[in-house]
Length: 121
Image 1: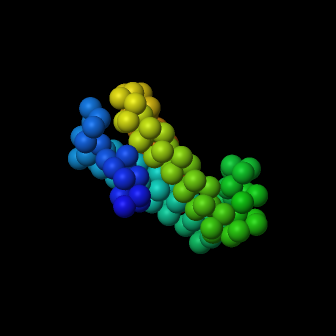
Image 2: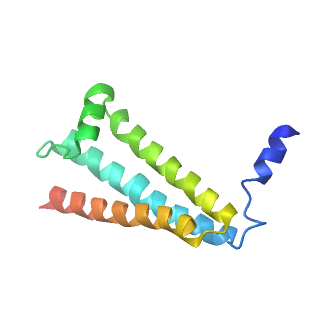
Image 3: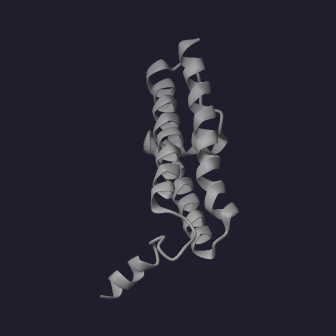
C-alpha cells in the first residue's frame, strides 16, 4: 500500500489545475520536443549527413552513445521539466506549472521547423 500512497501525490485532484489540461500540455510538448525534434534531428544526422549537430553536449553524447546519445539527454530534460511542472501543480504555482511544457513545446516546434527547413532546403 505504500506505493499507492505515493501515487496519490501525482494526482491533480488537490490542485487548481485540471488533468485534461495537463495531458494536453504535455502531449503538445511530447509531439514537438520529444518526437518532432528528435526524429528530424536523427534524420538529418544519420540519413542526410549534410549537416552536423550544433550542440556541443549532444555531439559528445552522440559520439559516445550513438543515436541514444541524442535521445537520452532530451529524455532527461523532458523528465526534469515534467517534475518541475508536477511540483508547480502541487504548490499551486502557475509559472512552474505552465512554463516547462510551454517552453519545451516552443523549443521543439522551432527545432523541428528549423530541421525540416535544413532537410528540404
